Structure formats: structure tokens, C-alpha cells
Length: 126
Image (cartoon, rainbow, N blue to C red):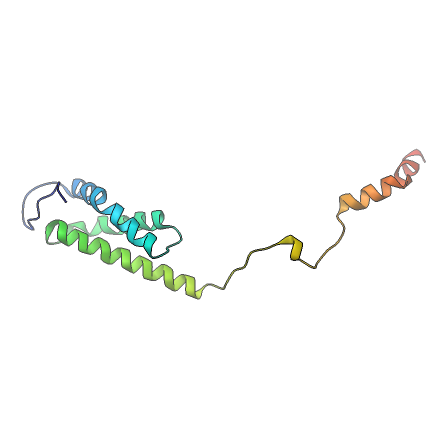
């Protein structure tokens, strides 16, 4: 916020440079906010927040305060969306092959058993 003036109606940087300043100033805070709430992919969600901000920059009033407010509103909405998505998703569990009761011999094991008995060599010689 040290790079922008806080006036609402002033000539100044273009929307692209305003976006760059907002990203540099606010992205670390948004990332921390999302990490603190246990979001699965905080970096990706941070990018989504700023992608949602860019088309709305022209409508923002209040300078950096207005932009900051909008950015954190978007971040919170994205967090809520992800939280709801996780609640709606079925629970998942890890897979441990040692605990799986379904067992069958592999094709490789069957071939080695046949080969060890000498049947394969006999079949090939005939």
C-alpha cells in the first residue's frame, strides 16, 4: 500500500499497473488467509481471487482500501465455496494393499510355477 495513493477519484496508474500493485501488496495476505483456513490449494485459490478481481477493477471505489476490501471478500467467497464442495464430496480413505483381503495369484506367479515344473520346456519341445 506504500506504492499507491489512497484517493478514490484521481488520475493515476492504469488498471494493469493498479492490478500489479494490488497483487504485490495483497497476494501474501490472501495466501496466508487461505492457508490458515486449511484450503487444499491455497496458491491456486489465491490466483483465482486475483483473476476474479481484474475485470472488476474499473468499478472499485476507494483506492487501495476498496481494492483490499474487494479482494478479501472474493477470497472469503472462494474459501466458502471450497468448504461447501468438501462437505458435499464423499469421504475418502487411503488404500493399504496389506489390509486388502482380496487376493489372487498374478499371471507372472502362475507362469513361474508352470515353468518350474518343466511343463513349459516339454510343451516347447513337442
